[in-house]
Amino acid sequence: MTFTHYQESELTKEQRIELLKRPKIDFGTIFSRVQPILDSVQSQGDAAVAQWNTQFDGQSAQPLVVDPQQLEISLPLEVQQAIDLAFKNIETFHRAQISETIRMQTMPGVECQKMMRPIAAVGLYVPGGTAVLPSTAMMLAIPAMIAGCQTRVMASPPDASGALAPEIMYIAKKAGITHLLKAGGAQAIAAMAYGTESVPKVDKLFGPGNQYVTAAKMLAQQSEAQVSIDMPAGPSEVLVIADEEARPDFVAADLLSQAEHGSDSQVVLLYTPGFSFEQLLIELQTQLNQLPRKDLAAQALENSFALACDSMSSALDFSNAYAPEHLIVNVAEAEKYLDQIEHAGSVFLGAYTPESVGDYASGTNHTLPTYGYARMYSGVHLASFQKSMTVQQLSQEGLQAIGPAVEILAQREGLEAHKNAVSIRLKTLPSSHE
Image (cartoon, rainbow, N blue to C red):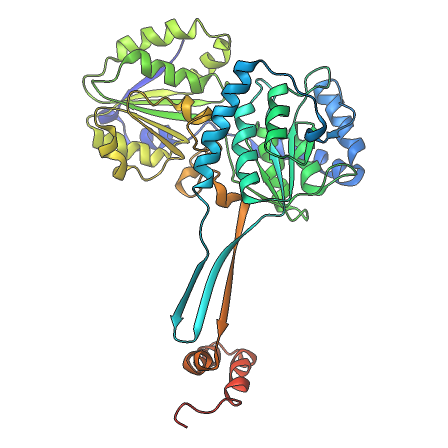
């Protein structure tokens, strides 16, 4: 097991810059492989999706698309209860995000409104390559349901027999998914972006995935498909800040919980004086050896590092510069540092708040910006499935009050027709001094 260690006070400026970088993704090569998949699905529809399914996964489920409401699903009771609990918490938190219409007068006679409308058709991608992810199905399907998106397509790769995991089907049915697409990879993204004989075209794509899924989303957004995406993304990541009160076994478990996602995941530990790094290494090795996915986690650790920091202030400065997808603050009185956290996808405060609870059941969304994009992107939330629309309405008095200013500004911009649209109306109104 390799877990590189650095001392922050000894880092040069260049070394710090290098540590803040993520493992490089060769998008040029990936784009060149993905573009033909998108092109073929755009031109050949379902037949191309089936062809790529067979080529990449060894099978293609028939039919490609099913109605979840028609499915008979059998789940162990304890699994169903666990899903129901998580579903309820996620729904509760996202329903609380419903925003009221803003309606106000900016000046007498000038009324402005801002209201939200659902995005009509959304595509929800649920990965299924190295692990079945019912949690992602909930994180995407529940806010889409609450927002009121009319067409909700969920895509997920089936198993070798062409069947989807019963957990995915149960959630799709419970959340009112309208179309369940049995396909993964770039071909599933293309099917939702362009539409096929059985897959409705969507307006926005959501969900995590491997480099090929991410590239497909990015290319589709740049194409004539007229589709947007939730966010750009890279491999999963977590940054843990630990102080002298943090238990090394807790910290090791949190690092490994993210490392097991895949060999390209990155986990970072920042620790302040008093934390036992030596004990952490022992715990990492012990826990790693017990994991079914230990080979993947071990490879992820090789892309990762630990940094000894002089203080919480310096640790938080590094964390804000890194802008992690997940930030665990495992220190005493963690909440008092919240105001100093500027850039993170989701924050987990205190010793008893593992990142796993946010992944599954606390209620927050786990579809988050990675690769440093937390500096400028939010994680998925209810408004991600909505668009805002502004409205204005003026009375005669309002136009008289605001019109002259609009005339002056339009004239300054050299847009005479803009000015005239106001002037022609003002001439029909009695002057204010009459």
